[in-house]
Length: 87
Figure 1: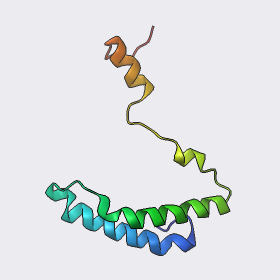
Figure 2 (figure 1 turned 90 degrees about the vertical axis):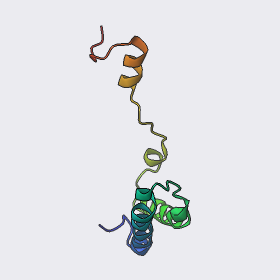
Figure 3 (figure 1 turned 45 degrees about the vertical axis):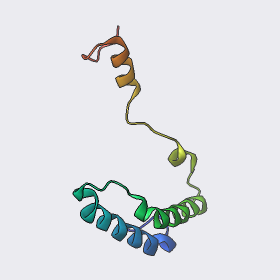
């Protein structure tokens, strides 16, 4: 799959290669430090952001910090309910 910006395709290929190497050669062997790909990821990310601005795509949606827990999970854990129903 190509990147959102044609200018970013080569950077994406480089990052994908780095990630795939890290995943197979390090992560699957228990080494979870993913900083080896951080420099190329940062350059690729900046390229994608630039392409999004050029295409008038709002960046604030991708810059929002999302957590893995939802409001649903938080409400149920606070009430002790596991059925998911709210009264």
